[in-house]
Length: 208
Image (cartoon, rainbow, N blue to C red; front, side, top):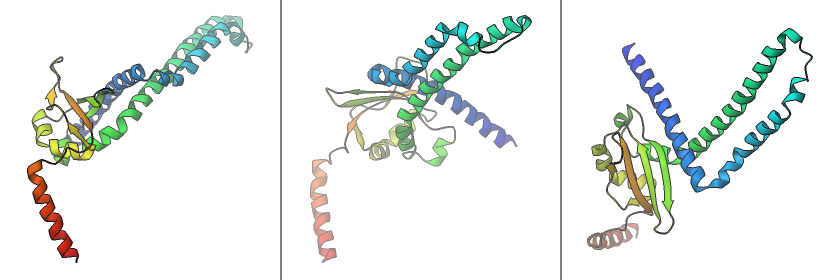
């Protein structure tokens, strides 16, 4: 029972952290790609239109006079809460959509026991188009030491190579890990080239 309670607590905590991180990620993505506002603007436009036409909406139903104040207040509250929930849901969906692939990929770089307290959550992502560097910030329950030990696997799974050592974000005092990388597998070192050539020759002999 204790393990079930602990697992449930960890899961609920992870879900709360994921929601907050995906919100931050969504805001970051909207700043980079303002076109994403196209999903939010219709909701805002419909809300403004509904408030402009509020008198007409209030007159749709023939409500008794003694219930009219309650009906009016209730309708106005719903006129705020419903659009707000749609906007928040849309923002959360944007963050989740942008995070899904990276979060799924990064999980495969760690052992199952290392993920028992939760998996890394993407909370920031930006690409420097001039240098081709992708900057990510992860909210991670996994210590930095393990990230460093798994660096080769991270690069392999992400199909990228790091251009800067993995480190905590020095601007904040928590478990955010900064990752700077570029697309493509890290070039093989020159001293390994001869070994690879010999291996290829041996394989050719074996195939023949």
